[in-house]
Length: 437
Image 1: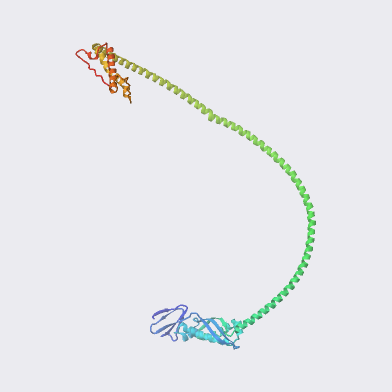
Image 2: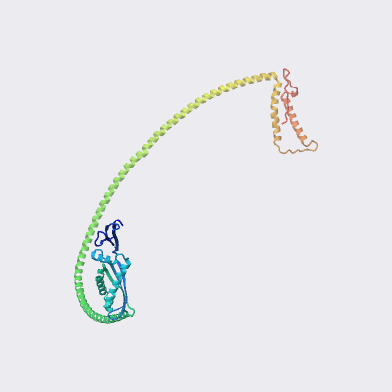
């Protein structure tokens, strides 16, 4: 090991070898160690708790008992002589070996003290026993470098029942003394209770007399006080009623004044309300009515002007329209007159042929009107008297008969000229075709 060596406060360093005539002891610190020529060792300074058991030790009376004690011992590191003594005896040994040496020493001293005392002394005065063991063990262990920190008895027992017998005798004595004390206490309590009751009754009688006297004085004084109080109360009530009447009258006067003021204020408010309503009527009815009247007048005037202008415009339009229609009628009349003149000239040129042409243009319309009822029939019922034809031939004959009658009518209209003999000038022959609708 080379250089500085350190240790904690619970151990000590022992350096021996060159440069040291006696070993150097360093409790809780550091030291420089030369290698090879010096040697360093450690010894513990921890507190060691030892259980000291001494079974079946005969006391001074020859009664065997067992005692278990607890001791705390440690090597004293602050005392150089004690540390040197501990190093001489325990250096190089383990902590268990050190504890065993201290335990054996303490047990021997514990057994010696037990043998010098009686069971009663050990049982009743444990503190004395612990003090003796502590003093004897401390003086002996100091030479080994130990310090006894504390020692106390943990347990005391015996196998012969001696301690139990002591307990029973003591228990019996205690019970006896307790019964005697209880009886004496009851007796004393009864005597004191009777004396107290006597004193209480005497005090009660005296107290009742004093209470009656005080009650009498109280009633007399109360009666006198009541008379005075009732008198004062009557005077007070009368004064109160008088004052209350005055107060009520004053309150009524004040209320009347208040009502007069309120009525005056109401009249003023109503007058102001009338003025306000007149102004409001002026602002909300009259002015708007005048404005509305002015507006309606302007609107009526504008409407009248509008109607006049519309009437004038319409008259102008009618005048222009009438002139236009008159011009159109005149132009149309002129055109129709010219057309009629041309037709008249044409009729004069064609004579009967022109008439026949017009008739031929009209015949299809006549035939259509004649055939219209037949075209709208869904069902035709033919009635015969037995001599005429029946069926479609009868119907065809009737249609042809109608057409023949139309031919006759046309011949009569044209002055008896048959349609087949009509011929126009310039070798123009109109053709006629009868269409059966």
